[in-house]
Length: 295
Image 1 (cartoon, rainbow, N blue to C red):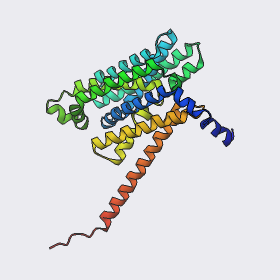
Image 2 (image 1 turned 180 degrees about the vertical axis):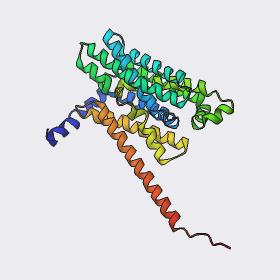
Image 3 (image 1 turned 180 degrees about the horizontal axis):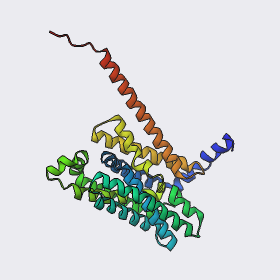
Image 4 (image 1 turned 120 degrees about the horizontal axis):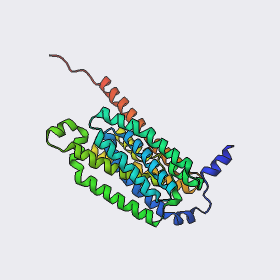
């Protein structure tokens, strides 16, 4: 494939206005998911549970694949798979080492089950592919409603536990000593994370959900240590990746996921560069500053 063929597949703006109107529901769904990803991703990064998202996504893929095989609603299967894995991680992972072990066991198990169910499925191959990499054109009015309701539940849940969850995420030992119900907060957060992952998998696919729930928040934390500023930047970065990825995907013949992941990773690189420049500037300032005179 030469470069002309490559760009003709990646960027095709024929009838772009018609596609924007036709798939407006997908754009709204992406914007809602970006909001969810920005909020949830911040806590995921603070709590150092990035791989938990991966494990939940794999089990979400397994649940969706099972329901696809049985002829049931794929979204319901995805949600059940996410919730089961989230509850297992929350209930069995009392300590960090236990959590890592559970996540390490769930990730290959969920992926293996998903591959098994997909292999047994004899329907359209596009249905199999969309579970892994997402499918932009599949968002209809009912799915947009479900995503909106799910986002409302997640945001209300986070608002209800925001301050104690932030405290428990930053310093769980001190929070527990102060009487904060750390284990109950962990359970609630993991359930919300399971719902967010299941919603995200519908659009970006199970393999690349990290680009929505991890990378924007990781980028924001490269340039600020303030939780509030990091939250705002995380939401902005997630929206840029999701909505920008969808708008680019409408202009090409590829799935949405490569566009979303590319934008998300580019933002991360820019934030890393900003952090590096700041550190260099700070180090140079310390070297040039005169030493205090001794009396």
